[in-house]
Amino acid sequence: MEDIFVSSTNSYNILVGENLLKKTGYFIKQNINNAGFNIVIITDSLVCKIYGGVLKKSLMEFGFSVFMFAVPNKESSKNFSCLLEIYNFLVKCGITKKDIIIALGGGVVCDISGFVACTYLRGIRYINIPTTLLSQVDASIGGKNGVNFGNYKNLIGTIYSPSLIICDIFLLKTLKEKVFLSGFGEVIKYAVTFSKELFNILCEQNKNIYSHLKDIIIRCIKIKKNVIQIDEFEKNIRTKLNFGHTIGHALERYFNNSISHGEAVCVGMCYITEKSVKAGITSLYSFLKLKNLIKKYNLPTALKFNVEDIFKSVLKDKKIFGNVIRICVVKKIGHSVILTMPILKFRKFLNM
Ligand SMILES: NC(=O)c1ccc[n+]([C@@H]2O[C@H](COP(=O)([O-])OP(=O)(O)OC[C@H]3O[C@@H](n4cnc5c(N)ncnc54)[C@H](O)[C@@H]3O)[C@@H](O)[C@H]2O)c1
Image (spheres, rainbow, N blue to C red):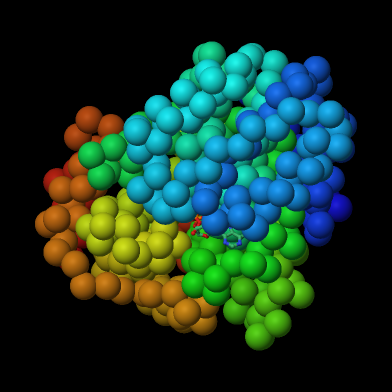
């Protein structure tokens, strides 16, 4: 098992390995000081059926009282009525400042649970147990949380670190292929923005991707850890981790969540890079390499959409500061920069 320490406002460890879920009770005793007796597991309806029992058993073995709340397993669960149900549940269970929330699920569960943990009683501790590739390499790390609002992605949220992350690679075995591959959207994002080495590893993979998965996941975690240790609250370099996301989030809204987050990010990365090639920022060679890698993981590189509709959604993006927008573009594979441009210039950029 690898133990990765993240130094941030609330520092925490990320445990990465196989078969860790059933040892969760032990890891909590080892890593969390002065934990209360109660634990609330927030999960989704599908993950609850597959893994809820194993987790509950492991916690009870260590003397915890366990309560479980499952949201429907879809993106639309990231909403206010779901939050209210969870707050009601916490009150009913008598959860206090000392108690702990565990998020057991993909990015949807991580995002809701982090927000609940940050706001309930002005903040209680929470542990992420990410169960999708996307949440293991990205959504569980760095404390960003939130819900969608008025159909705009993650409009309401905070940055509030977990107290521990348990990243059990075995859990990925039950993922549907499409959900598993969607996680490569974020993996490719890390590679193209920060690591030529990871990019080459991804290019070299043959059919047996599982044998290299742990190494790939650890590389991604370490990239994110290094970024958030420098810029936890996204004042500068953390913006790079949003490569492809400004367009990607708008696409998720445009297609009413019928495409996955990973798919949307891939189309977003390609769209922005196509424009940055036209603007003379990126070489055509790097763009073609990016597109080929995305195709290799059976993810989309383009979709038909109305650019003006996407631009209108972008106006609600968190990367807008007054009348300028901050976006990440890739100069060459493994090397990215942040551009700040007036929003009207960005509109032209999108229409190039
Ligand atoms: N906070 C962040 O930093 C951050 C970063 C990236 C993405 N996100 C958010 O993450 C969300 C997407 O996350 P996701 O791709 O994990 O989707 P998800 O959480 O919706 O999970 C996808 C599907 O996989 C199922 N599933 C999860 N784990 C499983 C397992 N082990 N076995 C079988 N089925 C399993 C779920 O029930 C669901 O049906 C988006 O809302 C996105 O905005 C957040």
